[in-house]
Length: 332
Image 1 (tube, rainbow, N blue to C red):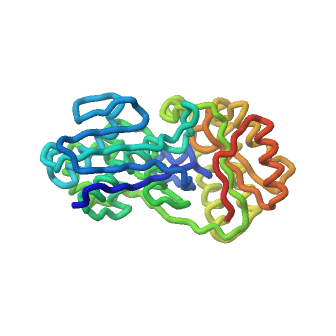
Image 2 (tube, one colour):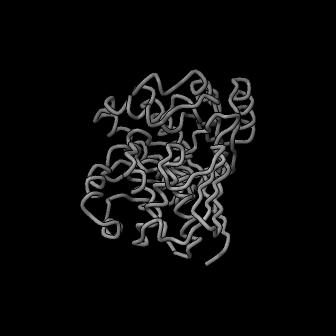
Image 3 (cartoon, rainbow, N blue to C red):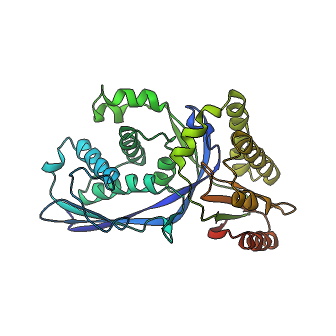
């Protein structure tokens, strides 16, 4: 066993399919964002958990702040068919909180923490996990805690790539948590699909941060009942158009499908597009670019794809004038 190990996980943002992907069998396009959290695990005399989110350390005694990390540790122990107290004692330290000036960035910190904790412990205990196993273990952890998300963030963070994620029936799997062993659950087909995508077009991908934090779980709770059959069908159609356009390099179809997805989100609730997210989206008008909100909306981040350098520069200027911070940029 290694004395000290260090691993990282990144963040994620939705390109398309947010909200619809909460319904089993629907697809979302999700992009990995290489802003990383780091976990370090060392041998210790007793189990200790540390995070730069808090100014104190914890053990496995119930603690609201560390509940997600503690549950992830329990999941890993269960995967080894052990109790936590039977594990070799370790100190787990997590750093790189995905926030700025005390405000969260909205690129997936809870998902990152879960994947990161399990990945770090597997590395420390020299256990090889497939991406599929890591995804299921992290999803299992969040389902046990009553998380209401689609697990798309977990899929993207686990694969650390641009993916098309088709969601599984979380209610059905949650019901099985009480009936089946973890080993049995891991061996089952949950009914999801994760496909990595290789974009075949030249573009700048940009992330704009509004500095208006939003609570995704609350937004989902508030808007879940607004999701209609027509919203789901039209969103799924446009997501599949966008997926095909990305892989075939069809810029016009990609722009049109993302624009339609954005309009569908706006029609779902006015709460999704805050003033700054609206400014972020409208900044792409009259440019060879497309911009939209990402994820639950109500704040946090938006994304853009720009198809020539001059328009990228103009878009960035417009964002900056609107008080939108460019969090990340990459070229495809």
